[in-house]
Length: 234
Picture (cartoon, rainbow, N blue to C red):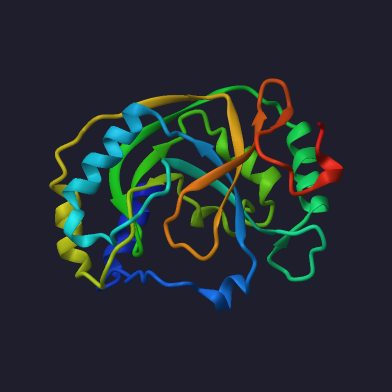
């Protein structure tokens, strides 16, 4: 069974989708303002067009106000902190370890193929195919435990379309997904990955690119003020 077929089975095995709530999850962020991820920026006109088409097709099922730009998440990092204290804080040492690991692998541009509309229980998405199998090596550098054999099946590269606004019957939603007429597949050439953050208090809010890591050069380029001064090359 392919990863996409397995994801569909897991989706349909649940009787309903998960309802998302627009509120401030203070019990999660505990006042920490930003959350960091490594992701692939695919915010391009052709991908925006595909996402918009899928969003229109499912509009009555989705939470209003989803503003996150098209991206493929590689790994979650945590809350940037100059003095990490909690398990989900993300400090300079953790970033340095990720960059050392990236520096030790073969870094070549690669392609992703984005197109098939599918769904998790909480959110519909466009599948991001990885024909060259480039993503596992990157994830092993950025999130070794999540990329291990034990957990690898939990990861499916994708571009989120939106978030479900209620607990909708999964079977009915599955039929809506199947009725989506778009058969377009967009091949994206990927030459960099990005360290991004979003406001922890805002569900589905926009991403800010903090830094780009250029694969061919093995070099990080800061686009915002680095949260870790010791690693700021400027």
